[in-house]
Length: 196
Length: 196
DNA sequence: TACATTTCATACCGATCGGTATATTTTCAG
DNA sequence: CTGAAAATATACCGATCGGTATGAAATGTA
Image (cartoon, rainbow over all chains, first blue to last red; front, side, top):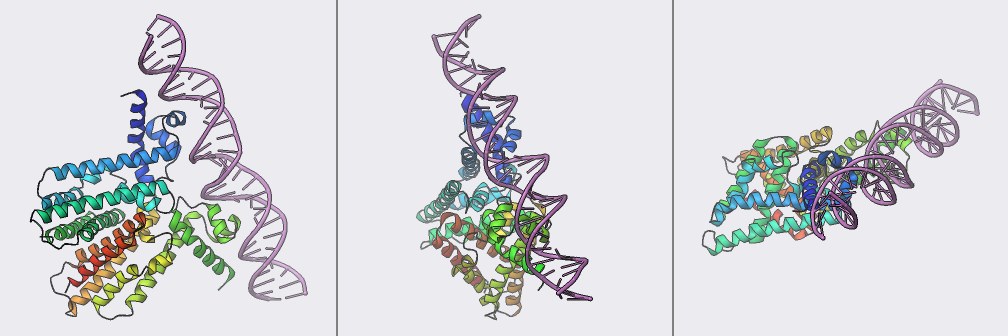
């Protein structure tokens, strides 16, 4: 790994939590200097501008989330248990441990970039659709393997599970009540069981 | 209504959509000047600072949302139909008409103020709990009137319905797909029917 | 209608914003 | 070990940030 690649990775890793807590407009270059221990000159030698860092950071945060969840899913083989593993990640507060201050990067970016930053919005939209498809794939797998009943509206079920999880994160973060997260996740588990 | 009260109302009304689209940090005083047609001097004669305007704007946006939904609910008397009216508001895009660019103020504020603005976060948390309680109240009403089955975990059901709706708004806004909103709202309707 | 009060605009404040030109240091291949 | 290239720091840019002191205009009451 060349020096440039090292520094790039360093900038991304160190600014990622800042972007995830303060948002894109809320994160200044001086914040980035503090987080990285580097100066603007150095940061701008590795990235074209703040936008470029933000986009790289989003990809990074997303990858962390995806890796964690897919790792948990990998521990199981049946569709039902893999879907349950998805909710387990939030129940155990594992994700909260990875993003102790910022919450879900997908949710944060989607809500902020919505009407302000088309490029980030596009990335967030891709990520959302990607996750919808992952959940849908698992449901279809469960159907074809006889684990779930037939005639499920797969898209609808996948979207609903995903929406409920993201809503749960918002609610529990803003109220500070972990029990809310657990209760809603209980409902999501029931949704998954009801696919049988 | 005195001049001050008129101007205050004018500032709140005109800056409300700006705050809801650009967020708190993303909205500058010059944005507020443009939106109101007033200068800083005038704005600061009516409000202590930007924070004070933002808080008043949040209350205003919340009131608009609440008024609309409660008005729709008022058209019905049974708990089930009142709950369905809650989802109807989003299905019909009525709320989108009120907030054409910004989406749900509760969601936006909750996500942004989360780790950055304790006062706004507090307001958003209150609003979230308030809505959870409103939904819970309706469910309890349905139970006591024999419309819904007994032994429902009311808090859980209320939180789940609310979380799913907010998640749906996020997903459909960022992807630009109204059909996603409609599909998830279909699931919420089913949740309500399943209370019977 | 006179006049004190309040509302609003102008002009300004220091601080910080994102970004860049340039000098200095570090890296690394020959 | 040398020297060119790359990486980093310094110093600076104009613009804008949130906020304020002060003077002009509108308001409302006696």
